[in-house]
Image 1 (cartoon, helix red, strand yellow):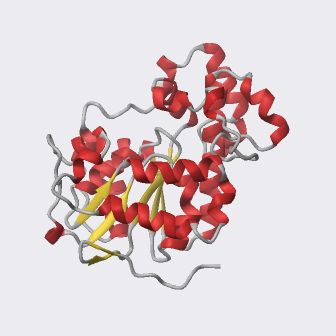
Image 2: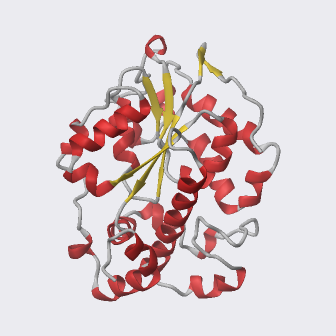
Length: 294
């Protein structure tokens, strides 16, 4: 059941129809965040520590998201993240500062220019139900990408690999756990013995399943699903669809950056055993999404 409407005011601006970018790691949410940061009137944050702390607390212990205080905690974290202060950008991740063209501590935007807010912090997907309760008029843009490319990206990302270390599993970690992709408590020992490629495939598989559930439950005017491959190969129509959904102009410039990960990079990056494991673990979802032939 949704909570009664709550009007959040940040820097004197009412937060209406905030946009949240969600997807598995390395699915391209950071790419869309950079594009939206260039959109007129938008203030988009990425990876603020206070938001990450809440997101990962919910990821470790999903039951927290079902408590009465979860919505307030999430709203407060985002309100703090969206504040425009003289040194506010100094608290952002490097990727966010670079996307905003900030070389110092900020701010990257003038409070007087803001009409909409958004966030593209990693792993927001796992907090989507809480975000929807906190902001009933929110708009969600979810990215789907070939799981093999996602795994290849995760294997090159120390931040992603850090979650696979046993030390990251505290006594607070609950199972089943969508964040880790572990469906049952008794599967935990098997998970601990898997190579990083298999654990990464489980995370992608779980994220895709969560995205499918959101597609079934959210109305079309609140959820837009884009494929990473279309963003790269068909940027104009993809960006046009995004712009219509968020009701503002969206720049395509970042999609042509030479540093944007290529489609099909897994062919050169995934070793034979890793590729075999990924396709075994995520076969059903890879086939359902058309990335793997039946």
